[in-house]
Image (cartoon, rainbow, N blue to C red; front, side, top):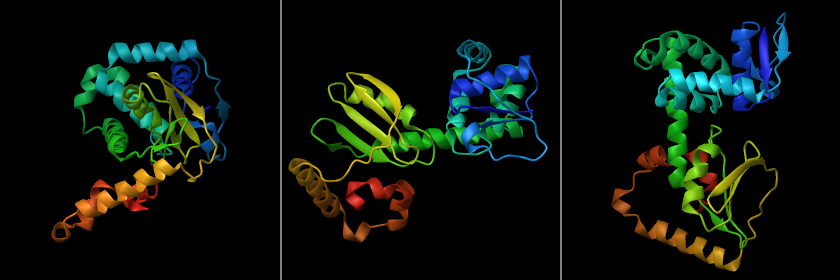
Length: 242
C-alpha cells in the first residue's frame, strides 16, 4: 500500500500513524509529486491533527532533539524519496531509541543524518546570503533554495525585524513567510514583485555594488573559493552579482 499525503509535515505524520495502526505502508509520497507505479495500490491519507500529534509526542518522548531535527530537516529536502527514507528511519529508530543517533553506519540512519545536515546547512547559509529590498511598505527578499527551508529561517528574521513588515519569498515553490512584530505565517505567494524600486532603494543598491567591487583586493581574488561560499545557482537574487 502506497500512502499519499498533502505535502505537510502533519500529513506525513498521519501516514506514519496509519502505517502502525491501519496497514503497513510500502511507500509514502506527497500527492502532487507522486509518479504512479504499475500494480501498486494507492491511498490518499487525509491529515488528522490528533493522529499526527500522537506520532509527534512519541518521537519527542523516544528521540533526542537532534534526531527530531534531522527528521524534520529531511522532510524539508527536495529528495523525491525523502518520505521513504524517513519511514525506514522511523521504523528503525522506534526499535532502537536514542541509540539510533550513534549507529551512523546503518543506511537508514546515515541517509537521514546526511540529508538533514545538507538542509540545515543551506538554511544557515541563506541567513547571510538573503538580500532584502525596501519596498516602502515592507522589506522583501526573493530566493530559490534547493530545499524547502523558508520556515527554518522565519524565527531568525522575525526576531531581527521585530518592528518591520517583511516578506521572504521562495520563488521556486511559490510560498512566502510574511512577518510583523515578531510573528510570522507561511502562505502561498504567486505574486511577481517587479524591480521598479523606490529611488532610495536604487541608491543603496548602487552604493552596495560599489562597495562590493571596491573592497576586493585584485591580487587576492579567488573565484573558485568565492563559488564555494556563494554558489552560482544562488547569485541571480544577490544584488552584488547582478
